[in-house]
Image (cartoon, rainbow, N blue to C red; front, side, top):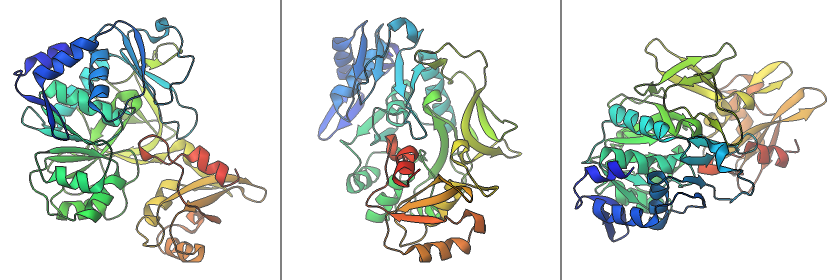
Length: 400
């Protein structure tokens, strides 16, 4: 990490936050002052001190555990192997796991991003994603590797994001809901944006086309904590598409059960407290399909599929279609046990529409067995890291 930071002229900007700019020289000084060989547990916020603490952890000989909940019992340092960073999964489908990430993983992720997206020293990346998730952390690493700069907000705000996207920023990472809210606040047109990388959740119908019309090059991506972010992203310059092309050095394949498997130097050696993986292919819990061009389309979580009366219900399909209904608000679909059907789909939603209205909307657009059998209006959808629906919590609310 120190080597990367030393490659750029000391006067070049690295971090912009509010009215303050830290050059590469400033950043090096802040990082060196924080170097440690210790095991450090850090609950980061979108603030300069967190940025420098994380970079120092990667530059020193210690191990940084990025953990907003400061969980006890991280275990002995020996469990981490050659990891330099421990990041917890969101736990959206179960208990969070500590992912061991090495500098080899991080450098491969940064190298692949530069090669695929083409960002470099002239680019500024907007950071408004949390730093306890790889979506935010990877921006710091990619930018330091490429020699560019980061414009960090203290949190996501549609007005602030829109202002940044109209300013010096050229690359952005967001979850789809963030982009939707930004365009609702300021529909554009925008100029000068190279890429807006979307990940972390399903993309509502029409969002990609709306973004393109506003001059926003929205690029769907696929990645995970275990690969330090994106392993596939739609190629820049492509027309609106939900597919994503693999980054250089990444292998993708579909397992016989439909799950996506990933290989390459980005893949973590394993989880905290568990042995190293021996299989070069990491099998995810995501379902997908790969076309003749090698591009991947993610179909949803394998462990989220609901088998109801012998039929498979894909929650992501239902949630994506509902997102286009003006009265649905936000939604999440989960399965709960049922004596007659084995499992039934229950939809939690925040909008003002009635269940009958939403069911009628779905019946016109999806197979009938995808229509939830129960509906529950809630004030807010339970969320995990990066704003992903917390399906375990939603299932409990639904009575499962």
